[in-house]
Image (tube, rainbow, N blue to C red; front, top):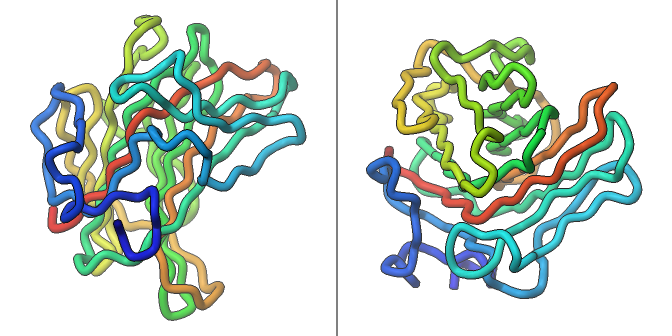
Length: 231
């Protein structure tokens, strides 16, 4: 297994078992992945009191299980799941997520790729808006910019899982690209956001379901999280 992270599987352990959606040719070298087939939940959770994150078997893309993010039934509620992994050897790191949104989802879905080292924390962060159907990225000022051409009506298809991926070049402190609904989009003109805080050396993945102020939340399911390097 992968350096003490018993449910994260490294590429040297089970490369042939990695199930990646066939919509897009896979890019990069698999570093670690989680397919949520381990019955006991080991991701940490956060959110408004009453939220649920758990492994379920009634909704999944492959392998028989997925991670549900279910905020409490209240406006502005959140449900987040996060994990840490060792820092890959490569400075270019990608995260792929296979997900499904409940029909009528009109909240926000965030995917964070965070790297901490030498008292700095660097953030690559994508956001999907269920109302506008647009993806945006967090820029170097901490503001979100809409990614041109990255629009997807995910909740139109009620029984479908989708794949999204984005890659960050942490050496040059910029995004590299994203893949949304089979479309490759160059993001190399966008610097990433960073803070001076902490002294841990790790990579953290965070997945967050956020209900907007006037809306009650909808559930979402995560089937696979794949960490890649050497993009």
